[in-house]
Amino acid sequence: MFGSTILDVAIGMVFVYLLISLICSALNETIEAKLKNRSKDLEKGIQNLLGNPKLAEGLYNHPLIKALYPEGGAKPSYIPSRTFSLALWNMATLAQEGANAASAISQSLPQIRQTIATLPDDHLRQALLALIDEANGDLEQARKNVERWYDDAMDRVSGWYKRRSQKFLLAFGFLFAVALNIDSVRIADKLYLDTPRRNAIVAAAQGYAAEASKDGGHMPAEKALEKNYDKIQGLGLPIGWTGKEFPASFGWNWVGVFGLKLLGLFLTGLAVSLGAPFWFDVLSK
Image (cartoon, helix red, strand yellow):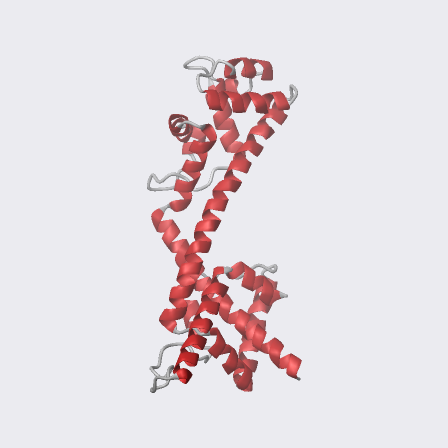
């Protein structure tokens, strides 16, 4: 019985952390979209990869890349590796001005290598020659090498986004916890002492997990801030400031309560920084 109670409290806490993380993740995605950070990261990554901003600009102006531009003229936030390699191959192997793009892409590998060896840009020339030589005369393998080179660079770009998102979640997790008084210690105490409330929240968490299993085990795409906020408020947990959180008299008791409050808010912020996918996986298991 005691073990079952502790497990139910844990499930309830995980569900709360998941809902808060979803709200913060939705805020993060909204801000990222408004600032166009994904497309900026991609452009910066390509500039670093090619080692020349002018080459990167030329790549973005290539018809294959231009076709990926969204409406409104904004630069794309994603470029497939195959598209990148073909556009770069075309740019690097145009032996003369006005050469046909399709024929340039379909040249033999020795001709391509000879042309690339004359490129004025040392960074790009050395990188492409290394990728071509590693292919041992196989044109398709050389293209795959270029694609893998690009994918490795995009992994670093994804790392920029993940680190920025984690910092955002950490900051917003603490702000959210303080603004709405989402105190992990107080919530856990409520779940432990209030059996009907605990059972209702566990049932809600089970329903959430069941809904996800119908969707192939993936986290439901719940981006609406209002929806998740209303769901948290509907759990009936002690969330929000009432003005009765601290004792009226100043003394050691007040210090203890204040310290416990800080601990509860800190735990909430730290939990949210782990992200919604983490808590969804924990809930599913």
